Structure formats: structure tokens, C-alpha cells
Image (cartoon, rainbow, N blue to C red; front, side, top):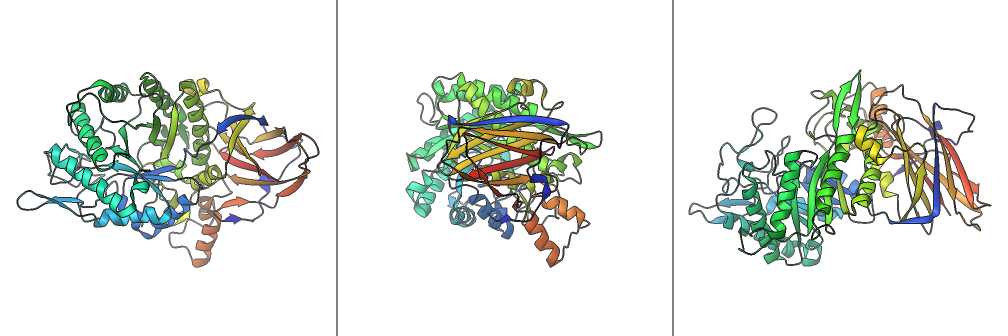
Length: 557
């Protein structure tokens, strides 16, 4: 990750007399440890697997891999879909399975290998989604490829297999091939998730037919690699009664139902996955996000998992966790998705991370992953507003938010803010009134890192900044000198979109403009970096934090 040294005044330490309309006191105590902060945010996904091997796809994989020294995980749809590997919106294919004239399976791993080779080369750990149905196996193969956004999305790829045994053999051969190509140890580090959102149109079968698909898939994986991890059901947000029932019934089936493949009781389950989404709309001329339904789905899913004593200690992965659910929608058709180019996306993600950790603590859930459904859309116009972390190879503010997350190393320590909204308040009302001004903090032997954000659902440019009075207790000198560095994502900083708009929104930027956009897309630190005295056990830092901004304060010794 590159760090620009461009000076910007917004992060200068300012005297408290420079009043803002909001004020928050944040107290960090080095000596109150809350346990390790796992990189459970380091999960990403997308619909179009063939973007993986394209120029900007491989560039972004490298950026994602650099976010954390721990594993970064990637999930994608359409890994078994039939076709020639040409991507389209919400579409991709690998042609891994066809049949000859006599109906015998023909396996072709060439396109899959290119995708997984790209992950392997970048040091990415696949979170393998087993789907969708090859044309030769679908009970309703025609029409097969959809033409989204025109016509039905739920074509032949979404149907159950006409032969579950052939499906099982396909999954087994895929796992065996993966072990042969990448080695047993590496493949045992992958998670294998059966299908996607089987409670809605992605599965054109009954719940019982999904349970059957799961049983045959899980048994095939374990036959090929007993140490592999398999899970599901990757349902939509459990705040919906239908999705909650599906998740609950799936867990009942895995615990004590009759296995459709083996005839025994129950099914292998190594992790549990479900999805959680917020809501967005345009109101009074600005974007209004909705963090409340997002957190309500997380809470309800955790509650369901916690109600199963046999499963409550299993890892849980939010295998899609996003502000809303239409990744392949652009701003031109959906102006509410303008948040995707803005710093509001980064502040939203910071708030969701903190609240998800609080919910996991409340329900005693082993939260393994929080997966952001965003990647890149190859060949689309600059800043088109798809669910992206890069546009034409230029990093968006959300990616800089994740770069900040990646700097949060070591043990989590106590951070309390007078500007925080309580978990219950946000579950009840969202962040529609007062902003959520809060923090996460970590420490290791070399320093402290404090992530601070100023989030509200309404992205109103007239919203006031907040004066942050940050105190750090327990410094325990003799750390006589401490280096303070301050990184920022806001409307003007670490924000290539703002620079692009100031240029006049060129769709064919010059080489000089392109270089400026590349630089603006980096996580930026100003020359406010300075050595401070640490003569006592406490330190104080004061600064202004604009609405929808995220700051990372790093103190090193």
C-alpha cells in the first residue's frame, strides 16, 4: 500500500477553541484488553468470476491481498455455470461440466484453473461458493443464460440437478482436482459453501431439495478431502421471517434430519453462513442509508444460531454484508447508490464492523467473516457507481477504509465514546438523528491504532463536523517520544471521486489526470505527523472529524 505525503489541513491537530457543532470525547485505555481483533472484515465477493483474470481484476486482487498479513478471502458466484467464460453483469461461466453424446460427464477445469490460479498468485484464500447448476444437469435448462436487467434473472442455472449423484461426482472431482493442483494443506484452508440464497430466486427448487443438494455436496467434499470445511446455507437476511425460517429449518436438518445422501441422521456442518443487507434511498436530494435493517438481520441470525446448542460455537460467516443488495446496479439507473463513490461507504463499514462485534459478543457468536460484496466492473465507465472497490483501476474511498482496517493489528483495547449510539438505539432507529461517533482501538508491542468515524444515515453535506477530544490512558512511560500519524478518508481526502469531479468528470482522462487520480486513490497522511512527548501515563489528541469521515490515529514508539 502506498501512502501519499500530500499535505491536507483537515487532519491538523487543532485547538479545542475551534468549536464544531458536534463534540465527542473518546477515551482509550491501553490496559483494558478485549481480546484479539481478528481480520474478519477481510472477506470480499462478486457475481462475475471472469473479471478475476482481467487486468483490473488481478490488480485489485493484489491490493486486497496487501490489506492484511492474515488471509484475505474471496467468494464469487457462477463457478460451475456453463458458458464460454465471457462475463456480463451478474453473469460468469467456467464450463466445468458438460456431457458427451451418451450422457457421460466431461470435466473441463481450464477456466476455473485460471480463476483460482489468480487467487493463488495473489495470496488470496478462496471462500468457495458451490454454484450454479451446469446446463447439462439442470432440470430446466432452457433458457439458460439470463439477459439481466431485461427478462427473468432466474433461468436454467438456478434449478436443481436432474441427477443428484452426477452433481455429487462433479463436486467430488472439483475438490480432488483442487487438491492435486494446489495441495491438500492449502485446500483445507478453504471454506466450501453450498449455493447462494436458496430461500429466494437463486434456487428454483423447494427447501427440501436444497437440503438434498447440501447433503450430496457435503458428502462429496468430505469423501474427496475429509479435512475440508463445508457449510451454508447462505440465506438472505434473517430479519425476514421467510429467511429466518429457512435458516432455522436448515440447522434442524443438519442436526437431526435424515440425510438424503447417506440415510444417516444429520449432515456435516463446519460453519454457518447467512447474509445481511441495509437499505438506501434518495430523500430531500441526498442519499439516506439504512444501517438498522442490516444490523437487525445480523442480530436475528445470531439469535437463531445461538438457539442451537450443538452449533452455537461454530464459525459464522456473513457471506454477504452490505448497505443494499444490487451490486450490478449503476448510479445512472439507481441514484441512491451514489454512496458507493463516497466516504459515506467507508464510515458505514466502520460502524457496521463495531456493531457486528458487539452483536457477536451479545449472542456469544464465533464471528469468522463479514463479507463485502464489492469488487470491480471491468470496462465500465469511471465512477459508474457499481458495487466496486476500484473503478478503471482507481481505488475508491471504501478501499481506503479497508486499508485502515488492515492497519489495526494486535489486541483490541477499550475505546469508549461520548458520541456513540448504543447498539439497541441503532437496532430500533438507525442513525437518523444524532451521528454515530465512535472508535475501535488496538495495541501491539510497537504502538496503538485508533479508528474513529463520524457516521450518519443521511449524507447531507451541511451536516456539521465533530470536535474529537481523544485521550489515551496507560501509556506507561518511559516511552518518552511517540510518533503520531493521522490517516483520513473524507469528502476531499483519500477520495479519487472528488478529484475526478473537480476535473470535470472526464471519461478519457489524460495521462496527467490519470496519475492524479491514482494518487488521490491512495490512503493519505498529511505532514501533521509529528513526534510527541509522552512524559505521563496519558496523552491527549484533538482534531476535527467531518461528517462521513473516518480517521486512523497511529501512535508508534
